[in-house]
Image 1 (cartoon, rainbow, N blue to C red):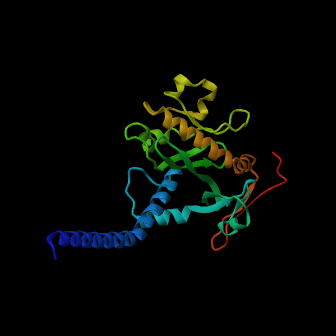
Image 2: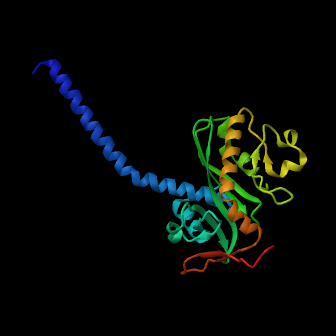
Image 3: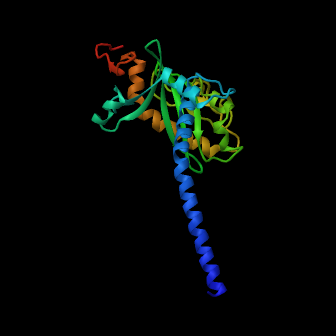
Amino acid sequence: MPDKLKSIVFALGMCLVCGVLLTAAATALQEIQQKNMLNDRRKNILLSVDLISREKAYTPDEIATIYQKNITKMAVSPDGQILSPDLAGEKSRTLPLYLYTQNQEIRSYIIPIESQGLWGKIYAYMALENDGSTVAGFTVYKHSETPGLGGEIDTKWFQEMFEGKKIVNQTGEFVSVSIAKGEAEKKVPDKKLPYYVDGISGATLTGKYLSQGLQQTLTEYEPVSVSFRKNRLKCRMQEEEPPWCDTDETDQN
């Protein structure tokens, strides 16, 4: 066999072997990657309602235990009805929702956020108090923004500014929560400060896109937020029973 042909055969053989090894490695690691992604999402849900500390490291088992004890995944219909995930398929266009409960009472509800960013999608969670108007927490768990600029959206200082902000104005009208172009106190009128956070220097577009994404998502969840604001939600979160929520149609407050 000519040397040139031997080289070609050798190269093809190496490509085949490497391809098989890479495929096997990817398949073997897929389950681990899925578990890591699930753990990261759960960790951020817990961070959004201050159930774990940002400064402490937790094992996946610890995260799972805290999550299962406090968080219940539900679904929301377009009219704001909270459904068990098992019933979500019976309603069209349902949205995922996470409830933080203690002593069978809802303390907060967590909304998954998917927003366009400057370089790709931004994935986050926003927790709202059971008053349906106050932000309890905000976390970003995946993005493609520029480190040191738009990438600051996943830092503690930025995310903690959302705590206590409002998604409705003084008359109860939905306004979302937005990111200012710079320091909110210098750029926004005093009456609008309750629903603005400081922008990130050099990341105006990231702030703009994230503000738009927050408004779009919170608008979709506004029917269930209205139910919380009117104190119409009646939920049963008992152990060993399917979770159930409904609205009290007699409450017109």
